Amino acid sequence: MAETKSLTARIAELNAEVDGLRTQVGLLTELVQGIGIESWLTPAQAAAFLGVSRDMIVRDIREAEGLRRAGKKSDFVLGTHYRPKRANANVPRWQVNVLKWREVMAIAPEKRCVG
Image (cartoon, rainbow, N blue to C red; front, side):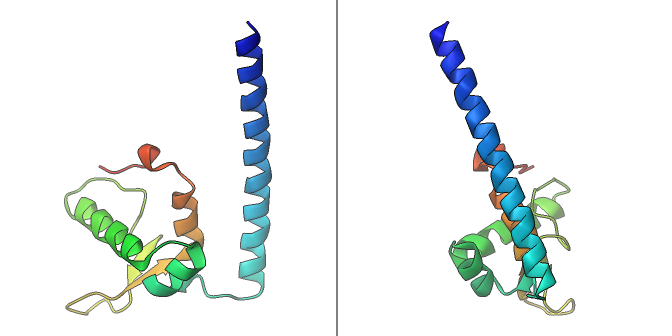
């Protein structure tokens, strides 16, 4: 019984932390948008902003594109999270919406929609 109470208390603490983090992210998002920082960045710029590698971002884009072409769902959506820099380019150069990308990064990898 004591374990259940402590687990319940810990879950409540974590939920409070998550709520606080959501508030902080919301405020930071408003700040970024308010001062006019461009939210569409190259994968290299986005990597520096998000604290991940460029290769990871490009890999996630390629995976999302493969799923999209196969008619499957992904948490990373073309036009929302990433887009080609030039629509008519033979080899697309990608841009990443760092604000939207960060939202997906907040989801645990095992809970992300991939297919």
